[in-house]
Image 1: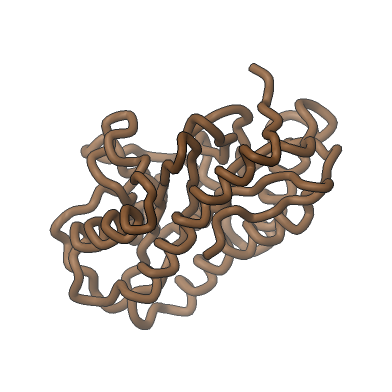
Image 2: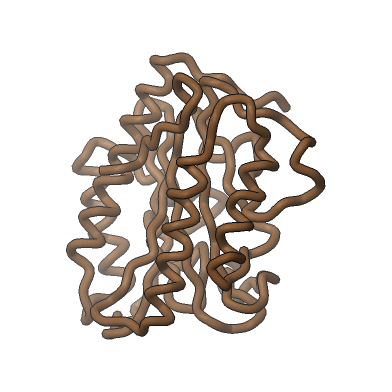
Length: 251
């Protein structure tokens, strides 16, 4: 399947959906505190997103039961909100999707709950740093495999490893589209499709400590690393405009 090239009016709609996600993540990052339950976080996120005129696109997507993925501590992605009460020292991944006028937004952060360990600070900063570093390196004409290598080199250079078998993705009038963008290189950097103006996609470094092999938990959604250690995840949606990546999901 060909990777879609979006017209300026489509990118504007994608930016509107992305802005709603960015604002909701910022609100949650500023509001979520120890003592709140994961279900409360989900409810707050959904209400805030809807008040911005967006539909929570994750709710019901492939059967997912909530508006916000709440990935706690060892869970790297797709955590389901539960009655668990957040405690000082937890780390929480928040992943949110939106739909506005038929177009989608998608982004994620990992946040500290109160004071966390230095190790957890480094873990969170690795996923955030890898994301922003990769975005800064994107230019028209480079291959997506080059982008995957940039992500992998940053992650391993920081002393961590990427989660396997899960990846970033294209986005537009569907929540997940071509291409798939792993956080590690498969094959050679001179292979595969090139990045072109008008492409819109999500980059999402998913970081593990020692083992990048994923394990799916009994809820059939939550993904952890085989090493059982804490993880982190950051994501932005970008559009390629005038040869560079423009972030669509910042508040």
